[in-house]
Image (cartoon, rainbow, N blue to C red):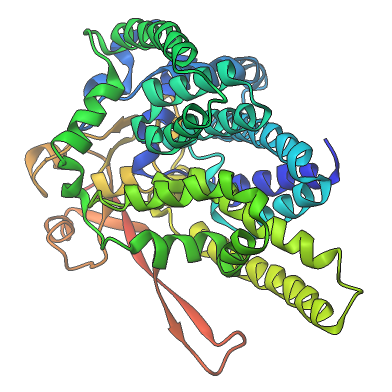
Length: 483
């Protein structure tokens, strides 16, 4: 790895150190990795049997990450390190897989567009926040991201067999919606006859059969019933359109919100790259078409289109390379070159701001960490973790004390008999007078409160002229000894 690749690796590590916790979208894969490492073949102890989620997800990604992480688990056990160390490790392993895939894609970019374009693509990606931040997030989209990058590398090299294998694995196991992106590249090759329809069908049937058989056999074992997880996800989200229950966004939301946030000021260079660098159009235009097609689905999230970030950055990198190599030819080129440097600095500032806000956005993880520091690890603790705390950072990797009991049972009435049986409570709410808190005013004491990001407000008396407003998010409560 050269220096710039090492810098990207270092940046990934820094992100994990500053934001070690995870959100609800990542819970299945993270809990599955934990259970494979610590419970192994004892499926009855796995988290997904008690909390299956709305739709089943594949265990193949967690199994892959667990196998890579296994030697570190033995090392951690030998040194008596807590499980939070292993949460870092599994996230690093996932990030290394994505980083390795990104490096393979970059090598294909270098051969097609030159080493300077590769350099600028690395630099653009590192000065933006979301791609590097998401590299270590245990989401199905990120499991698929590495395969998408490997598929794009194969497509650039004209290796159709490996392209279809990587594509099939990403679609059948992890994210069926990747079809709308990688399917465009396949269609382009069929139309231009770079690949014959006969050969494509033969590879798809052979590879698809093996990949489908693998996911059905492996996932049916873990879920204790016959199933094809991604087919159930596709049916729920797309055919039944149930994903809209989690919120909807306007049609152009990806274009006016996600891409500007994710690419920063680079978003303005993408159309310039498409106009002045025709060689990148075949690779970049399908990415734009993919975003348009995905915009028809009402429920939208940034992670759904993360695959296009490197492709759009490629258009910008090609344009920057064109300007930079001519920077000594005229005043106009020198002005544009200075603007490129300033735009990178501005992106870096935005990235630092996003990183700070993200650091303050996992109150559940902060709350359980505070509880472990406040209570004696040998004491008799039976803590209830409510939904809000579980969704904002608490995972099985954070159940550090073997003498404690951790409970995530949902739907227990506030103040009811079951809730009064716990010695400690993690309750997520913004208001100490909320219905979730009031029943415990006489029976519990507030040990501490985990703060979380609320909003940003303008303050002209500070530099920079903004204040980050933090408010109570998760309350740590202990039952009074007199009760």
